[in-house]
Length: 296
Image 1 (spheres, rainbow, N blue to C red):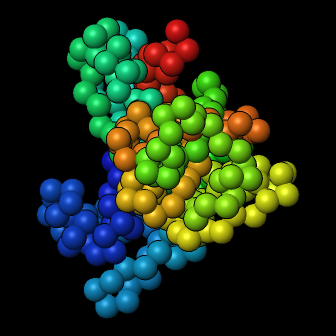
Image 2: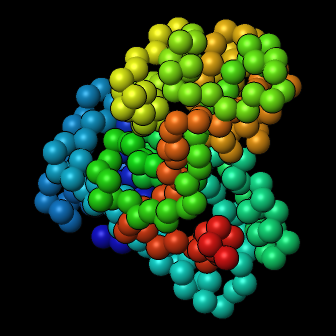
């Protein structure tokens, strides 16, 4: 069995039909059927159960699929590594970023593009779980994210480059604090306001960090909105709906004259930030140089 046959097998497993897999591979159906039969004969196992026109992986087929994906990833990364030995930094760099870290991306891209103009960026935005899936599927190489990174995979699966942490600040509607000299609030003052929090069913890291700080002060604010969106939370503050506590850098992206940003007088807590990648993946030269933009 060779790499070509593994690609054929993975296409069939993905499509669930010989016809669709042949179309994906830009080849005729009969040769693809023959290749599948040859693989099953060589391995001495049945890889698919035939259920009408639909093909379903057997237990042996599922095991081969998992191993084949790993082998193909290693093969592709090895080819990239060898090619890069004789080339400059070029091609496409695919990265992921959570919304609350968007403001940290443009300065690095600007500096990177001045140094490596042959690189084109492909940027995906999403929550930890979506970006974790894209990373696992090799659709992106790096994720710029809040820490800890929460996904469907074990934390030992990732390598992390910590970046400078980001202080939390209070965001209140400007009309709630008309005094220009008022530049800070206490946790007790914040707890008395209608409160907006950033939280989803699966990602609660920022919410947990903020509410841990409230509870350290013996406080429990009244939540009037839980949202999975930074943009929605900021828009609600700007509309006078409530107050929020978010990392300071968020407001570089969502700055608004209708929002007053204030330090928290009796609490100095921060949001950890970092770059995450798959521990067992060979990073491209462009990905390694991109990370250098954050540590130089």
